[in-house]
Each structure stands twice: as C-alpha cells, then as structure tokens.
Image (cartoon, rainbow, N blue to C red; front, side):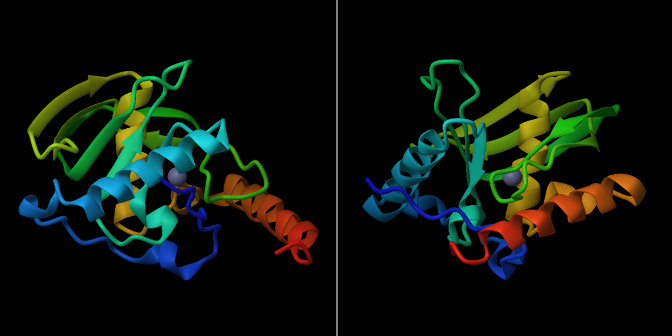
Length: 176
Ligand SMILES: [Zn+2]
C-alpha cells in the first residue's frame, strides 16, 4: 500500500471525467491496490471523510468514504450512479483538494438513491436521506465528473473561497 498525492485545485486533472471500471476488472490486483492506496491516503489526512480516484490522478469511477469516528467503516463505491434524488439541503462542505480551509454551504439533494458496485464487484443500491452520506455521495460523484464543490458557489461565498485559495497558494508557493 502507498499514500498517493492528493491533487490540489486548480490542478487540471481534477477536471477529467473519470471512466467506468470494467466489471470484470474490479477484482484485479491493480484495481484492488488502487482502492487500498485510496484508503491509506484518506486515513493519512486524518480529517478527510471521502476521496474520489480523480483526486489521486486516477481517472476511474471509484470513490471511498469513511465517516466513522474510529476510521473503521471503509466504504467503497465503484461506477456509482445516483438513480433518484429528492428535496434540498444547504450545509457546510470542504474538500481535501481545495486548499486554504475553504468551507462553504452547498445546496444538495436531501435524499439520494445510489447504485454502484462494492470492491468485490457486488451490486449495491443504497438510499440515504438527511445525513452526511447523502451529501458525501453527491460531492464524490461530482469529483468523478470533474466538478468541485466550489463550482456550486456564487457571489460572496465564491469570492471568499477564491481569496482563501489564493492566499494559501501564495503561502505555499515556495514549498511546492
Ligand atoms: Zn472533495
């Protein structure tokens, strides 16, 4: 296993639309080691709740989530699709790829039905409502489509985010 580098906005690889994983390849050592690396990378951040393969420069439709307090509930979703959504909530989000500690409210569907495969290639259908998972699913699928949560921001929130991001880049210019 290895910790991969998380791409930081505005890296253009974050804009790539990821390709589906061929079902027969899910159990391959290559895909399994990508998933293991993604978990190791997520846990190494200590504060991340999810990671999309796009964020570690792998253009495949895979995302992982672990929002348990002890990091012992690893969930992996391959070729995820939201097949139904309903309602709206507006809550705070952040992202491992967006620097500067940017946290802003984003409007998301309140209830989603997610179809995907797990890391063993088993088909899943999950319904989540009014909780953090529903929001995470939408945030991570956005990544697989080359979108970031800051793309949803307008006006003052967007300007505040841009300011924080450019301040961060100025501070880290020499370190990178
Ligand atoms: Zn993110």
